[in-house]
Image (cartoon, rainbow, N blue to C red; front, side, top):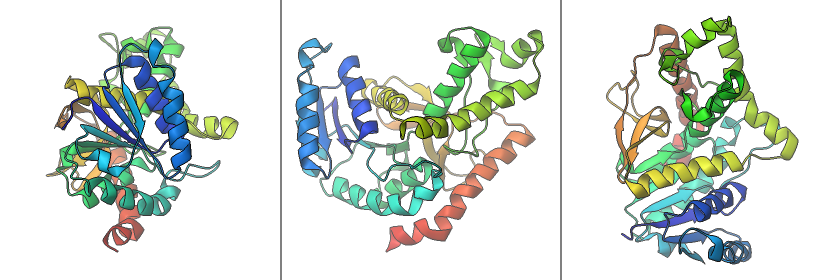
Length: 318
């Protein structure tokens, strides 16, 4: 395995937003681009490479193929059908399951044994597909989960309270989609509970729920205005990849595998706070949920499992 080697499968807007972010951040020694559109991939490789003289470090960038996955430390999958205006993430499931299943087979045929990061939507389902098809240990397959949702939440709260988003410590959990929720008892501004801050400002809990609803609606609003979202998720993916490459034990709300009644769930990938390092998910952080929050998590899991049982499991087995 080559330390610092990253393979990106899918050179669309999301993948290239991540690649561009990593070029500017540094920390990646080798970046391989793979896409069904070979000419576009070569063009993207050329375009990125022309900025290397202004980048913080040397990086080898090339258009490659699945054989290049063999010694990679991380493979990121962003390929798949794009979300259309008015289309939910879950409606993408059957189309993208077939695509992701084949991509995973191609990755594993190289002998790959690193960490796979999945961003293709619906991400919780697609992460499950990759885990099942790849046969890798569950900690080595993670999805982008609610990382972007959490970033959106922190930004909106920071704007409302006029504080830096870096000092907002709040998480969105559950499905990367409409059934997500915020465990507000574990949300802080600096070292102060957000509920106390809201009370001091004479806001009600309705205000917090409005903030969460704005997070849910954000993707749909962006898609309606510009057809797709990619900068935010590109930066979020680079954060996950950096946590793996740097082995820095970051706490991130990735889509990870719950088993043995973790959060009272079993055999499902869903967004929860987890410690991410060079092995993928080192540990899942179980925070105490109240009855309402547990019910919301159960509902998220139910939605995902019903989709699996109705179509996904069959496509995986075929």
